[in-house]
Length: 395
Image (cartoon, rainbow, N blue to C red; front, side):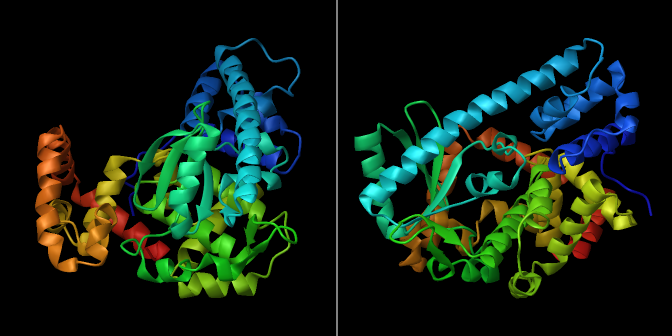
């Protein structure tokens, strides 16, 4: 069976995985990598690593090698490492400030994603993040947002489907989550993550800083990976997180897998865990592992619109149905844009029209045309390959 996703040159991807492995496992770089670092390879390595927000780790690893010739791409990777460290120091300081402030407000909160995961990396700054993610009860959000603005000088509040974004005076992006997985993504996953507080406990007696139980934290990590995977790709970083969550902490696999099975995520989790072992432990590839790898590498950190559209066509059952679903949003999705519909579902047709008017008169018409053209441009071969991969992953 032929592969239809764009293929990244094997030597470069192999070198990147060996470099990441050496840092995650605290092992010296192999002679194989040292010998492969030609100017041409370094150019490809920087391009691939940067596309997956891993150039700083590559720069850290390569800086340990003696006797390398001066090279523009080595300097770029080293610069990425310095920038990552500086960004981490700023974000960690702000995270500490936020935690202390929420404790003062006596508001329960749960740190998410990178704020938790970076403790498992050999050095905390290696786990880069573009924002700080914190879960807060929905009823506490208005008071918290107002306090952030009035007391901490935050600004530019923006409401999204599952969070409210605020920005610190230094420009650090903070996402205050009230929902983790929307029900239009998966009703089962939404239900399993609906009440986080029964699966969380204070980090220390009397604290308002709560920590999720391991099975729930792991489940959310997989669910978040799967959501981005379906939206075009999730990048390499979540696989590094996954490998560390399976190798540096104690956990009960039965509890993790029980929850994953309830949320229809066990096939995806097992495939993702295997790909992480292939990259960081040298487990052997099977054909579907190659397909999954190519999809991830081609998508970069945020995925590609082509991958997103191909998945959407696969899920909706063809081009026409996919296009119609974009024009007339399902109730489970549009209710997040217009929360009043949660209590007054009968108004859905009215707000469909409101949405169309906003799209047409706020400069979005060209985006709709581009989306329609992209929808029409998905080949049968790509759609077939996407269907094969997603069926294998249980998505």
